[in-house]
Image (cartoon, rainbow, N blue to C red):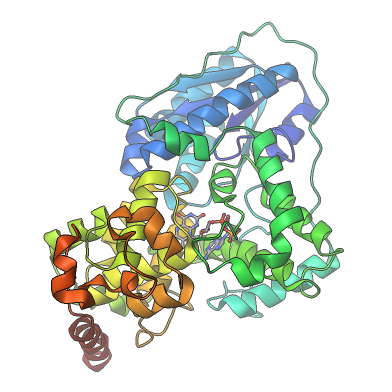
Length: 475
Ligand code: FAD
């Protein structure tokens, strides 16, 4: 029987569980659904949609080298998926539909609806583990529940990795050609603007490039990751997130790259490699949280009581934060990096998220949405987890009283102001001390076209602490 591979966030031919299973079972056809209405509803960024399409075009070529035709169907949203897929299965006499699991609530409902529709047909649906090292539900507490604390989750992951390592699958052998023509991949989708050439040049498409970026990071930078990962002016992190989010590279491939650098060790040896594997496990943790505690993705705080926080309606402050004109250079430089590149350094994501949710006391969901609308690596679980960590509404999140001070964070992690000068050219003439807090220059500063701070840090800190404390008293 023929096999259908439905591609989603798994845009690669190497180490692709569903592709390998399909091609080992019989002649395989691949499908990708373009769903602009769904992507808009999920706040997927135009640069991310463009990245998907560029990777899909590369993937279509790789698949055709394997004689697997890639079919493209465009529908408004996932509601149409069961009918479109059932129709394709009928037309191409499909025995099995193969998918790699995705973990968002809507994604799971979509797959259940497709499965349900296929039960009335000769086609069966098979789901595969691909986006994660460990299936959600397989890393649990002694009583079988999902972990809420990362260090405990990681301990079990370490034990599993010691027992057996998830291996990588090779690119399948080429199959005999099929009498089915591949569809062309559109270069753009209505409703999503085109990103700049500059942004695109930062994120070349294709599996070969992703492997190259991973190998280069593992060989040249991973050993130094521990020291350089918090310095936004340095290329000290892998910048692999967009490729992981779109599935152009797999977490197993990332893990093995780190293990090669670290002579097979995952929890000891080179601190850079160990810390990097730790980050892969944070990625894993937040996806498990999404499955175990699905309310987090339904606009609810993990800690439900935090939904009662008195979030401020402050559209002008929100817009200043979004556009990078708060008068705090580290916030503004970070937000401009996001708009220009589709990516933001992790240290900065934490600083700007805490500034919005604590100092401005604006609902973290506003920030979560803005990030999704602009990130090329936007990922529901990691983004939600990162926002809820920063806003102290999440699991294992930063305690509410540990507020980052954006000025001291700036001086600590960008001591020479290199990152600030890169993104705020209007401040380039200031020395490395003045650049973190130009408002202190008073009269001298008026010549520079840069806004004054939109908020008093001490007042806003007290306001946030009071709001959280009152939350406790109200319970
Ligand atoms: P590296 O430091 O090289 O890490 C390697 C990989 O580990 C990353 O590519 C990523 O897949 C994973 N990872 C690293 N840190 C985390 C983390 N804290 N949580 C989960 N996974 C992690 N990451 C996303 O992939 N998509 C998002 O939408 C996203 N939104 C975030 C929002 C906020 C408010 C915060 C604080 C963090 C967010 N992160 C998100 C996590 C992290 O900032 C990015 O994964 C990281 O900056 C990507 O750069 P990198 O590939 O160079 O990471």
